[in-house]
Length: 236
Image 1: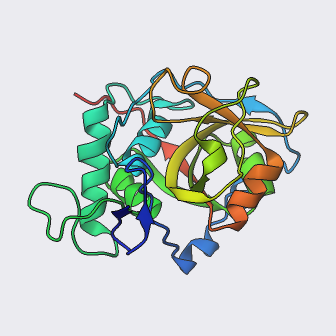
Image 2: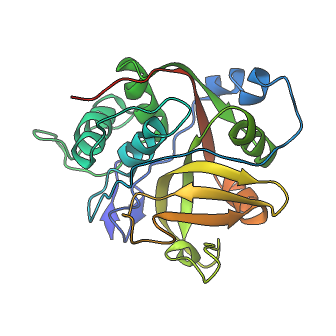
């Protein structure tokens, strides 16, 4: 087992999202930014397929996929950027000592979604961020505002997709993951996720998850965050 920064453990280094919630976030619900409350189906294009390999750093990769997606696509994002410029920098400002960046002591994997979001905002990719606190918030935000960065418990049934492209929230929790939600289908009641395990995983890097399974994950310490007033910066 791999011990993470907050003392939790995972048997898969890729699943190193550490759960942390700041109660002040409740003052920034995504629903307050959306005038139309009717859910709609929508998919946001994301033209890159990042691959964290056998690295940790899922927070950096999930956030980088969001930055690369519409409605405001950042160009030039790479695996190296996701790991070093988002994940490592997030480890330096999060709630726990140490990290996996050069010179870190003690040596630990993992960081929180919130820390990764703060670093991304500092770099000028967006002006503010808002949170979803329910399944309806997530569906409303993805359908009306843009893709969402998710922090979720990852379960055994989510390791690979079935013949229809779905992952299932079944079995034991094997770690925590940060992943992009880039679409919602209201009629068929599923979300479309872009994973950071390469284009060969799932259905060309994507998977579906049912509303029921997502509701279960959100109730078990899950989180969703939306970036507001995004900027199309080119990474050189």
